[in-house]
Each structure stands twice: as C-alpha cells, then as structure tokens.
Length: 262
Ligand SMILES: Nc1ncnc2c1ncn2[C@@H]1O[C@H](COP(=O)(O)OP(=O)(O)OP(=O)(O)O)[C@@H](O)[C@H]1O
Image 1 (spheres, rainbow, N blue to C red):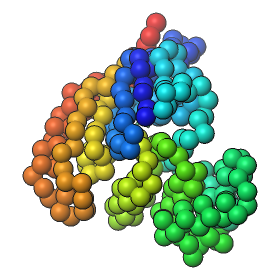
Image 2 (image 1 turned 120 degrees about the vertical axis):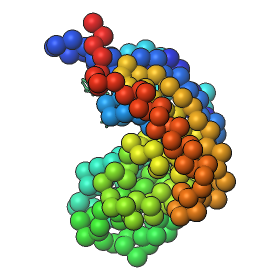
Image 3 (image 1 turned 90 degrees about the horizontal axis):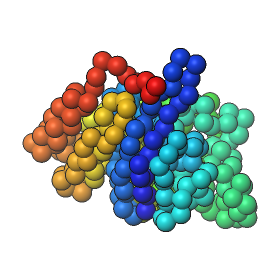
C-alpha cells in the first residue's frame, strides 16, 4: 500500500544544510498498523510530511497503491499533534468534520452520512453542534480523528497525536485508534515518542536512528491482536519488546541531534 524508497531530505540553510533523512526505505502492507519511533529531532515529522505529499524530498520516492506521491493524495488523511490549531474555532464540530468532504465535492447528503458515521465512531454524536472551544483537549482530538475518518482514507498518518492529552485520555484514544483501524480497514502509520504506546498500538514498530536518519530496526509486535491497557501492558512479552526498542533508541541517540551535510 505504501512504499517509501531511498527517501532523503536535506534542508538548505545559511549556516550549512541539514540532512534530516539520509536513506529511508520501508513498506506498509494494505491494512497494516505500524508505529514509528525515534529520538527527538531524528526526522519523524519530516518523513510524514514527505509521505503526505506536503513536502518534496531531496531524492527518493513515496508510492501509494502504485501511484507516486507528488502532492497530497486523495486517499490519505493526516492527524497532527496540535488539534487546537487544526480545528476551525468558528465552525461547529460537524462543519469541521465535513469541510474536507466539501473539498472532495461530495453531495450534502453523503457528507452528512459520513460525518454522522465518523462522529458516532469517536463517540461525539451529541456534540455535533458544539464548537471546538467548548470541548476538552481529548474531545477536540477526537474531532480531528473523526474528520480524518470521514474522509475515508486508505492510509491514515498520525504525527504524535496524543502528546498533548492526559494519561487516561491518551489510553482511551489509543484504544479508539485500534478500534477504528479494525472497523475501517485502514493502513495506519503512527508516529510517537512513546515506546510503550508504539508497542501497545502497533503490529510493527519501525525504529529510526538519529540524524542522519535510516530505519534502524523493524520489530514485529507478536502480542495477541486483542489488546487491553492493563493486561497487555502487564505481559512479559510487552516488557521484552519495550526493552528491546528502548535499547535500540538509546543506541541510536547521539549527542548531536542533526548532522551537517556539507
Ligand atoms: N524547515 C526546516 N528547515 C531546516 N531544518 C529543519 C526544518 N524542519 C526540520 N529541520 C531539521 O530537521 C531535523 C529533523 O526534524 P523533524 O522535525 O523532522 O524531527 P522529529 O523527529 O519530528 O522531531 P521531534 O521528535 O522533536 O518532534 C531537525 O534537525 C530539524 O532541526
């Protein structure tokens, strides 16, 4: 479904250019849920922007279902960390969810159907008429997720979407993502700083090295498919996977966050 090959990104700058991504190659199969972890500044956001067609890589390719990505693809949606800035405060929850569907030029009845389903899926049916500023942080992030789901993406990209919410809300949102992933058969690439979150959510964890960045490890999460916040996290295998990835990231982290390319 998603094929990233030899991706390289160099940011030009006045004091030397920064090689954020050196040579990234990985594939995601149709319907896979993979998490991407790596040390701070290793280029996770840069990678997502290139995959989402929001930024041109210096070299390398991103292919979505066989088609090269040259701009934002119609069957991909992105959920960012800053839900506060990604929702329009003057639009109701429903209008926020339907906005991209208008861009897609869907008829009003179809837009309504999709927003109803998405709001029901994230448990916000009762809040369709509310405004984002009337909702808690976790609820606002659920609106952002509903907006992405309503778009009916084949691939959902998430960039540290739960970094700004409290621990209990975060756990609820993690379970919501796994439920939505199963219900809508999406391919999900989920970027996080949090190793526990990556192991809990993913079928695979891609570990990025520090800059200049490559994929350092690709760990299969061989935990049972049914996950729950208490049981799964208490499993011996969960602890083993977490320790393994933690050691990889410790290895990957070097004192310098970014290398100079010239
Ligand atoms: N627009 C830009 N111009 C120049 N350098 C940039 C730009 N954006 C990012 N960088 C550099 O590229 C490297 C990777 O940044 P990026 O934001 O992709 O990392 P990240 O892994 O998402 O970071 P974090 O985990 O802290 O959010 C960093 O060294 C950063 O300073």
